Length: 126
Image (cartoon, rainbow, N blue to C red; front, top):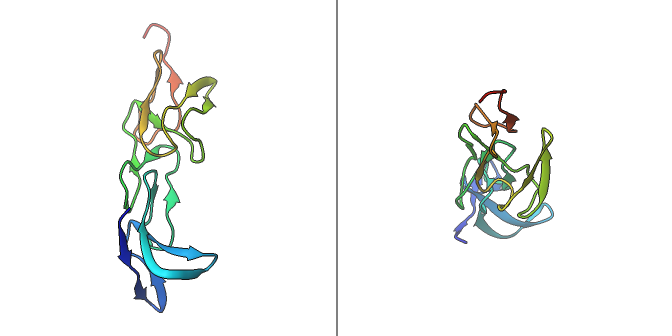
């Protein structure tokens, strides 16, 4: 993954957006900034945070997570590929790691909004 040198901002060592300081505990080890991995983002340069439900990041060095489009959902943060997750009574077996992409709702279900958190059953007759 790409690295950048750290910078000093208000007497605090930080990194540019999309990067986080390499650290051990609360102290900088090397003053090197590491790119945030896929499924995470950093807007403050201190740490890479996992994308929340309904959001994703499919590139390294992301400064923010993106809303999943309508008709899709993302995996809850912390779930790994191959994990079965129950959402609104529906079981999903995810083939992706949390926050790295959005998944289409299964047949007979939908998600009408961007950044949706769960697929819901279609109304009768749809």
